[in-house]
Amino acid sequence: MNIQNKLVVLTITLIGALSIAACGKTEDKGPQPGTPETKSEPAPEAKTTVGTEVDDSAITTKVKSALLADEIVKGLDIQVETHKGEVQLSGFVDNQTQIDRAISITRGVEGVKNVDNKMTLKTAETTVGEKIDDGIVTTKVKAALLAESGVNSTDIAVVTRDGEVQLSGFVDDQAQIDRATQVVKGVEGVKNVINELSVRK
Image (cartoon, rainbow, N blue to C red; front, side, top):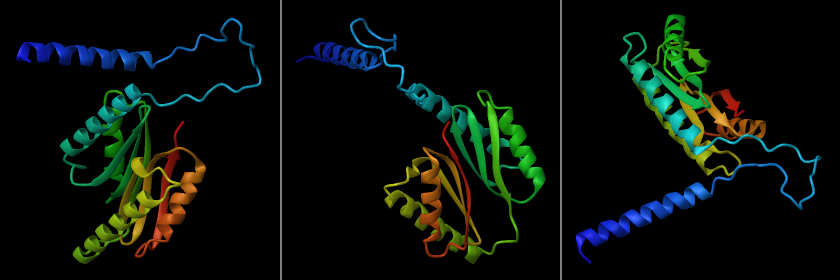
């Protein structure tokens, strides 16, 4: 098979794959003829589409870039999570000015509909040894959440300072929030858990 034939086969395969993906999207047109209309069933919950997830990822990237470009907040460990245009900021910062600045920058990013501030002020200076310990605790917490089947940990950000673990991000329901807290409290080295998780709307 020569190169021209290979390109034709590749093009046809790609078009076929896109057609199948497009066919997978169905439009709700109400009850179909010949099918009984049921009024007792609740309307299905709105799900996050692939397009929304891509938009949220783009917003997260823009916010992170904007924060890194700012002299006041660029060196801070601020976590950014986005769901349907709502941006959640979390992590530990030195003072209220940095919190206010981070919120202001985030609000100015295109596509941001709302900013949910979950940032926490640092309580004391952390030594190099404590920073290393905090890194180990963060790794252990992430591993514990990944191993827990009752928690969707892919959208959970974990930040540790002086053994205090802050969880932030978006999960499916309150049960996952409660379970995540329970799991993290059981991790060696965790002194306290600040749960800033939100339920997806």
